[in-house]
Image 1: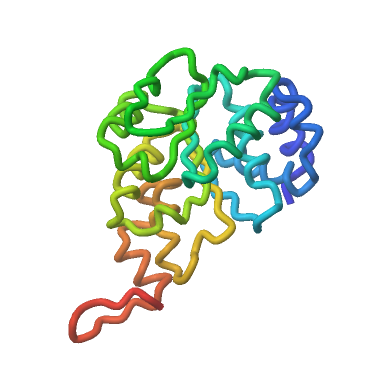
Image 2: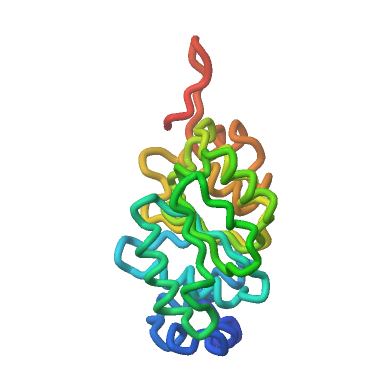
Length: 222
């Protein structure tokens, strides 16, 4: 458990900016928020479905509001639920007109200073125009919901998002299933949070994935 004095200090800023949100957090959610803040805003929140990962992420966003604009990357179907949650819980420090929802590749408002939060889907990060805007904005607070979407280092969306996550000062990953099938699924997510801390993928695989050299090459599926 997080020490009480650390817990209180971490939640104080959240309470000053989003008092209803701070009051709504359950004890285990308060610990999750304090944990993320204690890790300088770079953490994976991996609670099971229905336990309030979104609420905790929004609380961490509130703590770092002075570093906004914030980027929220989500599955396409989750864009509007996220907007609803932001409008519900951050109404003390954000208005509906300050949320930019990227609906398609024609959106040109990502760098517009009017917006405090941009919500974009993983598929749209594959759009060259959208990605260029995201990169030029250099978001310092980034949330990646269902972060197991970037488990495959070779996937286009992973190549697009990983540099954005690494460059941000605050990076909050959310997933109830960060390792869907194998330990190797964790590497890109961990590397996003702490670039280089686990070495290369090969280093990680040899240590955590029971890597085996076979006649045709290495097997990292353990």
